[in-house]
Length: 325
Image (cartoon, rainbow, N blue to C red; front, side):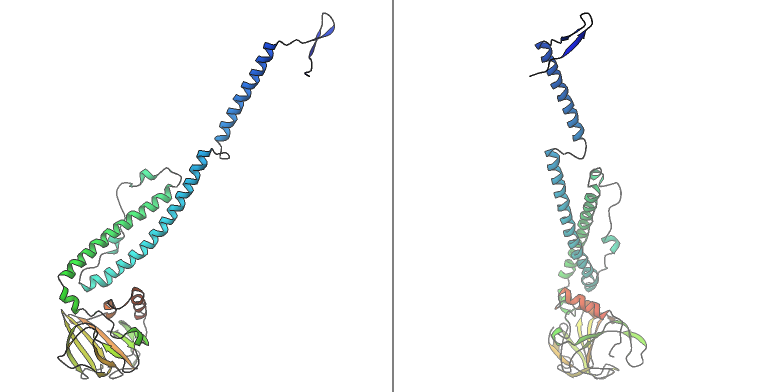
């Protein structure tokens, strides 16, 4: 039951009940509802403009943005793996393939060059994750450019290969001692300590330590030019002329399996490991000559080695230690 309201009438000196008409009551109720509605709408807009309350659409967009961030992270991981593979391919291209075909290596600055000029990524600025998106896009662009350069390089190598099939057969391309027969690679190509006088001298080949009488294999097709012990320091040794300026030398042998003038094929057993000549232990000293110049044999071990084996031999042969001859 609603309470009655009164007012004091000064003329009659008494309290009189306030009479409110139904119309006035309706107007008052309507006004209250309208004001409450307006206040609620204003409060809602204020809340929506703060970070404490999101609409279902905003929540959906937020989840979608997080999903995009995860996808970009996954993409970046894949790009990093692709970059590693491409770097390995570029290294082999410069240090093996282009060396074999006597082509100039591609300058690293050209391979890794970015993009100059105007801002290529201005359309990606101004967003919440602009930095992440721009960096990922740059990485994709640079990798794409590197792949194009590498593809053109391989096209050039392919063209050289088509014109040099005979040269390919002549290139010393296998390790002269099988990995299963090796004790270790004792020394590589470069400045090394001489085992006799301890001075630092140029070591012009690779020393393969292996048991006595381990088979030694021809690195490629060719003709035996020498199989004797008349060269100072080499002891019993074999020289094979492969043509196209390539010659291989196998020194400190215990015995021969070929003779001068004999034709050999890649992989034929030509002799056996020994300790003859100027040698400090049982091993094979192996050299590769190109146009009369001694070159690093490790660059020619590509036919019978996996990438992991090649990298390991490259690492070991690069160490500056004492040679065995």
